[in-house]
Length: 228
Ligand code: LAC
Image 1 (cartoon, rainbow, N blue to C red):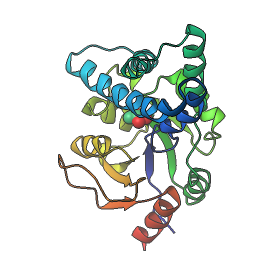
Image 2: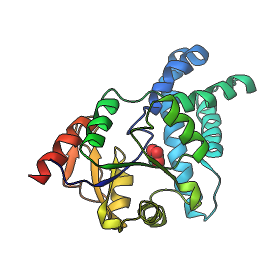
Image 3: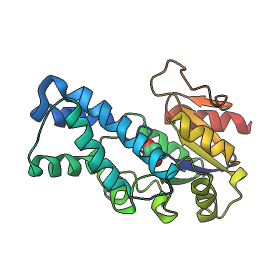
Image 4: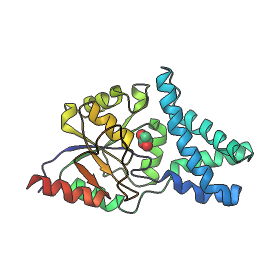
């Protein structure tokens, strides 16, 4: 049996697939859909980093809206306000990855405390959790909106530990995003990297964490093994 841990899950890219929105984009953009989805995600993350550098905060809904407009501009596509609203609404219905339901159930059964720790606003995360069937087994939702700064500011991770009523060293961030993993470890948390592409390409700002898995089912097995 595993030693019960507090696990804080990243959402976009880890529990749900933001690039999956390409299916929705195809209706508007045909072949350019995937490029728009990827640019949308890249710009969204870039904007969070830049806002934090400028010590300015605009919430993730604002960031997601602005980055969608930029991604559309890159391919020279103009959409009606209605179509943009529909795409934004689709962001609350992103599909979970295939391993997520089983993985979370196993982790819950093993006695771990499960929380979300995300850049998303509380409103976005509540809707997404409901639509993707994440809650339960996830009990707590922690949004960066509570501290008005984005990942990987240490303030985010320290706040999450406080919300989970544990010292940072007793919380493990689970994320597919290397910048998030490195940020959490820098703030004193443990981490697990979910290598969703499966090719082992981390980044070079920090070492990969000791725990690297390809799915949440594998994570449950790893935590069981770690306890032996
Ligand atoms: C999140 C982004 C970073 O969910 O994926 O916080």
